[in-house]
Amino acid sequence: MDFDVLSAKRYSVRKFKQIPVEPEKLALILEAGRNAPTAANKQPQRILAVTREEGLAKIDRCTSCRFEAPLVLIVCYDKNECWVRKFDGETSGWVDASIAATQMMLQAADIGLGSTWVMYFDPAAARKEFALPENLVPVAMLVMGYPAPDAVPADRHAIRHPLEKIVCFERLPGA
Image (cartoon, rainbow, N blue to C red; front, side, top):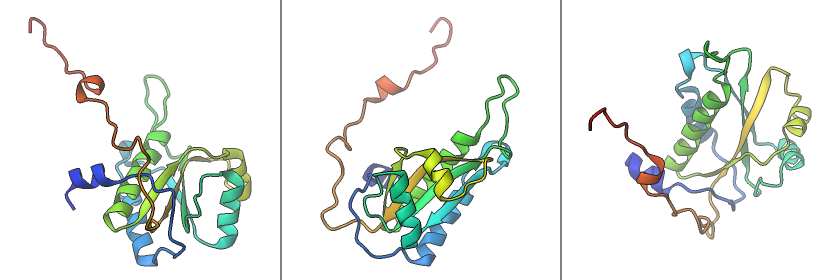
């Protein structure tokens, strides 16, 4: 599928078939996250793949937004591995983890899976349930699986601001 079609077609799936994601498809998704560009190629993204019922029950204790997906990727970053901007000390962790998450969602869509980026979760609960060490910062939970036959995009999915609202072109002096 062409990228422009893929990026426009992908939507947040909130209803899934109750069948597992095949290991080879999960491997492709995880590889997309591994290949994500990161600041100074530090690669601080860390991903916990949750597929077993016991782990999914833990996810349910962290968020109400699993939507019965059979796969959840907890996308984190290692704060000890981030690039640091010298001007203000800002680290790249959130951005690097977000790029990895985006690439994994698009890869999932490309191979026929649906996903939803979930930021509505309790990070303290995730840290406790999955015994995350202090250096790992959870950024998002990607719920994934095969979309149910009646899964549809949210009503507002296709609503996009015009480019003029989100893009400002630099004006040269005297132009």
